[in-house]
Image (cartoon, each protein chain N blue to C red):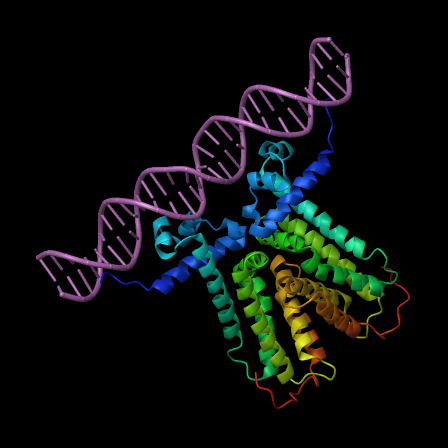
Length: 203
Length: 203
DNA sequence: ATCTAAACAATACGATCGTATCGCCAAAAA
DNA sequence: TTTTTGGCGATACGATCGTATTGTTTAGAT
């Protein structure tokens, strides 16, 4: 066999270049030639690693998903309780607007394809629903105040985080202000401000 | 003088076709030929009404702004008090995800250009800040509960509405669920649930 | 009725698009 | 050392891109 290269790593590298482009100009802005130039490789090489533009976009969508998941995972690595975990997850989403706008914008680009492409929609819905379940579980585990429905509250928190991320991205507010808004909201849904009441329901 | 046509109306009509395309494929997906086909006119006509692609996109951005403003204005037309006005404004934003996904997605597409294009950024920031001020004023006029900062709460409400709109668009939740989440949150920031306390500060 | 200028269609141009195909090179198997 | 084969670059193709330049129609002023 001839020389061997880490196939998956090269694909991911090229896909990341594609994400950078689609964050700028949308999915239609991802052209093979531009991706090759952005990744610093030849046009033929992109063809060698991807069967076509559709394959490139599909791979890019999965890489995007992994990058965001990694970003969030790293943020909650040192969290000890459900309350802090919940806070760090939401904060990580908000911080995408400041520290990783490419991921946020590329996500928006793929969101557009959601309305027509069932595959992208499934990817989006599956990921979104999983995040929603996790957040709802964290809300329940964090000891919610009476009258708080974890499912509905998870929708509110997730929506709030996503909306704040956009606000941070355009510079409407700073990350610190967004964090304060987030903390203020979290403070309202938790039982007592300083204590973790509900001993059951793990994160 | 030869035959006269409503220049602005034709431009707006073509721009709306462009918005439909850029909601699907992003700003790079807006080509003169495709716009002509989408609008049902000849390619030369698009050239006649727009100096170039940049002019088309600029006009489309302004039309988008007007469309959203019109959507919101119609929603609050029959509102009587600041509380109902505030609720209808936020609900109108959320409903974009269900009733006018094109406006929402096209907005996301232009949001991407915000990071590089100062003109688009100014347009976005100006509009966003105006909405924020209006919402903050509505919060203040609606009689906020003690400890509620209208400015911060406006950021929270606007972020929540935008995030929920995305959630509704992808089908994570229905408009009714989003409306319930919104009402639940509004109920928390208002003083007494049924009364409009603060008599000053107009909307 | 004629003229004029705007509305509109059609074509042409080079550049870039996506895809297919070819050829070279290097490294591992023989 | 020879052979093999995947990594990789280069080129070619028709289609479409944005733009420029034409030409044709038509309504209103003269």
